[in-house]
Figure 1 (cartoon, one colour):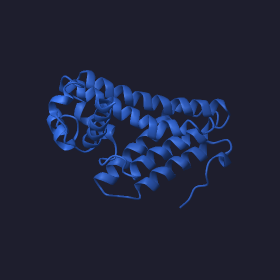
Figure 2 (cartoon, helix red, strand yellow):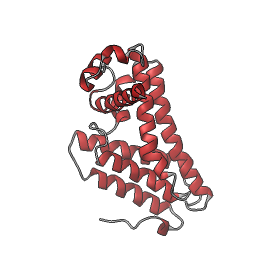
Figure 3 (cartoon, helix red, strand yellow):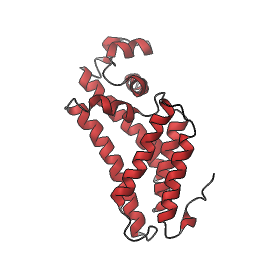
Length: 205
């Protein structure tokens, strides 16, 4: 149990650190120093840097599921569930659950030109997220909550793009209203496509 607690503490720290500095600069030595644990003890969990990176990506994916996806799936199927997914993502960013805002947004550019298991794991996590958005949009259409002919792939792309833009605007340009803008933009889009906009909140200024 003690070993598992140490493992989880290291992964929590690694995801937070990577959200700011990326995966490449992370090492067992640095993590051990930051947490005040033995470097040699960490080798029992991860024999090399790639194994550690893969574990960090998986930990970040599970964190995303627990903090953003799972709570949204408790909402009724349809537009309310889709809207909750976007709201949870904005809340996760706004409360600075991670110091860099988003683990995946920070590490994706770093691995784009480095084929291998780590890039594959990051790409798979992003693919799962966009697929979830598309699935919830398709379900909303099947329930009759979206207008006939709504392009699920297009709408999923827009929701994802607006969420990703928040990271750039808040961390680079320091535009804190970006959270409100992203919520409002998605809400306006969903209400415009909804057959019954009353299932969604009223738009606020």
